[in-house]
Image 1 (cartoon, rainbow, N blue to C red):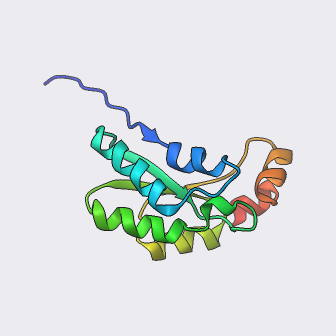
Image 2 (tube, one colour; image 1 turned 90 degrees about the vertical axis):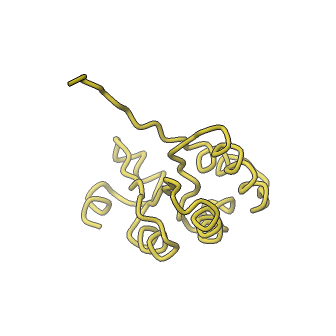
Length: 124
């Protein structure tokens, strides 16, 4: 039997790239970018993050974007970044079954990034 090693590559551009832009990117533009990634053969995509729109206005359409992606590509592999239990629950309600939970390596970055201590992040 052949020994085959595999790695999973997760494209985070739709989440990381969209959230770092100052002006709101329309939902349809986000969908168009994700369509192009899928057409290019990308298999795993982190499409958004479930965060407070007050903190990151670019992600205010997270639920709608996930629902569109899951409807268009029911066999797609989509995930989202979540900073807390509320975000995880919202992602699950939108239909996602894959999330990435945020815990920063340093205590100070964790506090600055998601406004909570390591202990609070791990407890939740």
